[in-house]
Length: 87
Image 1 (cartoon, rainbow, N blue to C red):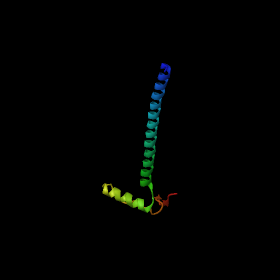
Image 2 (tube, rainbow, N blue to C red):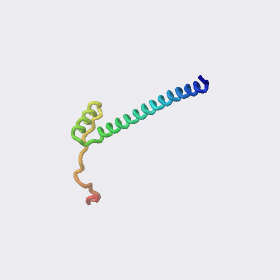
Image 3 (cartoon, rainbow, N blue to C red):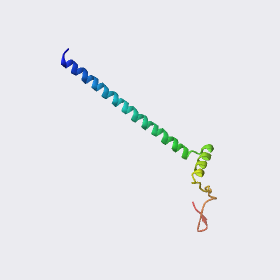
Image 4 (cartoon, one colour):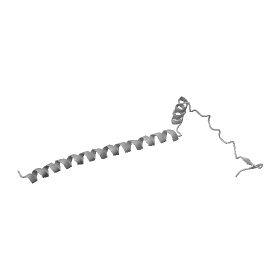
């Protein structure tokens, strides 16, 4: 057997392992980034949703965390400026 063939085979085997490790690293990184995006979207949805069930769960979570706030009051019309309605 020629030494050049052995060296070539060893180089190919070494390169294969490096490529496989590189692919595995890229896969892990992509998976982690994808999961982070899913989690961010889920959290955003939980805090901004107007669905009654989500509002109730969010209110319960805030109460349990001791962060409950007074409900916001809806404005009762336009504010007055110098006795006239504000436009």
